[in-house]
Image 1 (cartoon, helix red, strand yellow):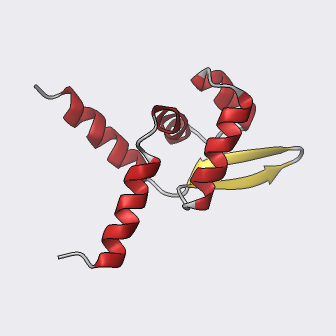
Image 2: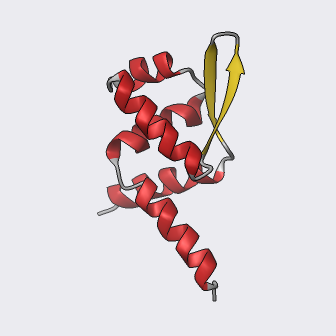
Image 3: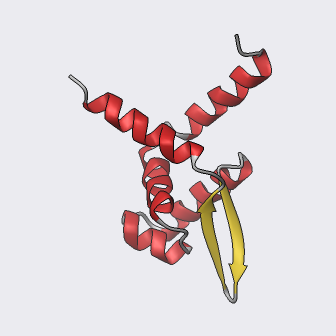
Length: 95
């Protein structure tokens, strides 16, 4: 059985994944690393909202940020989150 620390970390992950906007951003990043402006275009969310969600996602280590000239490129930290999202979507579509 998982320890309390592991369960607490999993609960934080599920809290982060509980917002549709964050799932949109993470799904877009699962396709390819992107800048804020590309994420705004892909998700149709406002720039301030995308930036706010990215700050939260970076804080819990789901997303990394790399400077590229004047832009910051965001990417998933690893593929685990993409798989969790894909599994959750598949599960929600089951009858």
